[in-house]
Amino acid sequence: MDRSQLAEFLRRRREALQPEDVGLVKGPRRRTPGLRREDVAALTGMSVDYYVRLEQERGPQPSEQMTAALARGLRLSLDERDHLFRLAGHPTPGRVSRADHISPAMMRVLDRLEDTPAQIVTDLAEALAQTRPATALFGDQTRFTGPARSMIYRWFAETGSRSIYPEADHDLHSRTFASQLRTAYVRSGQSPRSSALVRQLLAVSPEFAALWGQHEVGLAFDESKTIVHPELGELYLHCQALLAPDQSQALLVFTATPGTESAEKLRMLSVLY
Image (cartoon, rainbow, N blue to C red; front, side, top):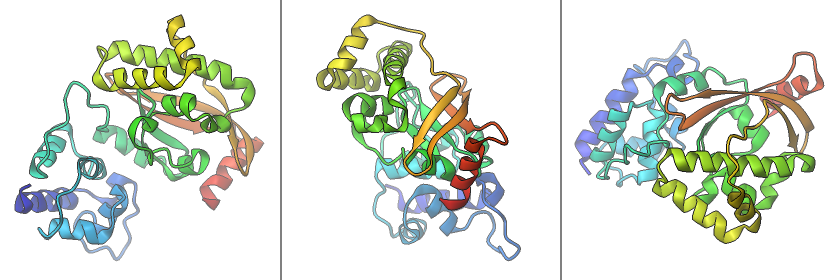
């Protein structure tokens, strides 16, 4: 870990960003060039004190998970992310499978959807970032670790996760999740991450094993979705997907037809949560 270079790099990247670059409002009394340390801490999910100590060359070595969060929060390019990992004393993440890194361009789009449920997910259905309305609608999907990071794993191994969809839709969702994992598994050249997820699911879920054996491909979720919220009930939404060029990530945006009860419920999510 190169404390001085890490501190300098973090400070320079923070000062290069403007509040509007990350979806924040620039107040009239803001004097700090670029983002404040408090802004970066909020964007990365760490305490202000922890981040301040990193910039002051006093902090402990950030974990690989925390370093990845810093890269996303500071909207780093792929080369800048790798540089940050080296300064923090970690090996750079493999370029063959780089689905955890969100491009600055995609993050800029997400930042401008602050009043809309939207989230960025990998092709293994791992949520990397959510807007506040998306967290209110689906819960915090970024908090999971291990294989549970994947919604596909949770769907088959932790069936309580299915409560966000009507029971009548469960069978089709199961088939579609298995089909999408098959596509990601083959597209990645049976990467270690996708291979491990398949092995783990085969070990814990007979339902998944049966569907995997059917070798269905090409299934996709319908753009029209029914979401069951624990307090607001059913919402009838449209899901639009913006795919990354290599299809390793997608930005999912959820909207409702104007004037409908579901549109009013979405408005309540944005106001109340």
